[in-house]
Length: 44
Length: 536
Ligand code: HEM
Ligand SMILES: [Cu+2]
Image (tube, rainbow over all chains, first blue to last red):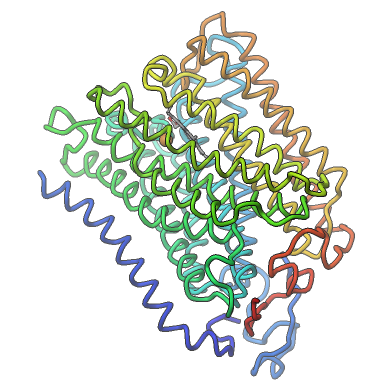
């Protein structure tokens, strides 16, 4: 059984908050990676 | 590890409850492939890590067998180089890091009172990227040219001269990086959003703190490694010359990028190890951790500083003196928060009622030997000294003290400590203690003498050596075989405990006071904290 199916009040309220945190962190990692590569590729 | 399912409390649980689990839940292999349960995933991380530890260990045995005598006896120089490369890569990315992610998966939700990780499906992906990465790494031995003989640091320009094994290795590093980044996002989100009511940040067990900090290090540094190997890939195949002097690039640029990742990486390994030790020492001293707040600040300072010292790995590339001085002093600065931590651990034991079960023994082994590794780190941080010692066995001795006697011993401490909670069984205490003493003795036989070899000038990553180094190398090789065999005892202890271990009491360690011990049955049921506990 998946946790996001657990019938827990805590979870359903937090789903959106989690997504927001996760997407922010993902964007940060993506900026680190692509920003980093772009810097070197554009410097050529 | 626990396949025991509790069926309480799910609205739709009882209706189709045919084989103990919920009806739609796959069993057998598919259970593990599709699982989104943090305990299952933690278990898989730990077993994967141990398997990789054995693979990397076999490679170490090949290295030590070749170095038992001067001259070339067992393997070709090219194969020897690939052994050092994949030994390092597999131990760092396949054994140590996944071991601590395994602890994170099992323990963070239990310690903060959360029902699971924040993104259970992504958690499944984080784990299942690892086996393909391992297959890519190992299969590089099967392609023309064999495994890449470039060292785990993968310096240019050697990487541009390797066969297709290098490409497989690069793709493996991409997968490992993706896995780590997804795992870290999950860990940070879980800790920030899913803490039980009353569990403020400064009430979290220190293990949770260390993982919060480590996950930030990972999110910030893994993309840089991914970038470095991607640039290597385009240099190899797509006509760029980032690291190629003939095309206007600079091989030293690679070293800067790699170590900007690489030094935070060594703390990615060390900081969760600090976290485990910070749980074990108070439990076996029957006292709260001394200086909790200062531990949090010290760990954070170490993490921030770890991004500012990378060029201590590059003192001889031709830096300006001002650069050498800056990196020397910045590196020495890290010893201050590290010292704070060591003193706090010692102060925790001061006047405690100590007992010395296996987890505590490994924690004490950690304390002595990690500190010794920290000291040799300080020696190496002196630019003028490092000019002599860089690329010698002194460096090999240094990082094995911090990574084996440090991180690996801490992982052993953690496994013995939480094993009863995970499985409901006790391991054999006598065998556990034997495992500790064998590991401690053979570790020192293997690596202490490498300090002398390094001081006498024996270079690392070379399959042959001059006659004056024979004795110490033979001692080291004997120690290494002993250490390797001792780890089979660990496997035996674990299997024996799972199969026929005695039933664990509810609280096997009477000093342990975190949520998983105080609020949950032993063994922890499959689903925990569906309704959050209230923390005072
Ligand atoms: C007080 C703490 C530490 C200091 C001052 C320190 C300093 C250094 C220095 C100066 C070097 C470069 C030596 C050379 O290549 O010539 C080095 C290498 C290394 N250190 Fe540390 N270190 C510390 C802690 C750690 C920790 C905690 C870890 C890992 C858990 C670690 C892992 C490594 C590794 C893997 C290398 C070798 C990298 C390679 O060339 O392959 N160190 N350290
Ligand atoms: Cu470093």
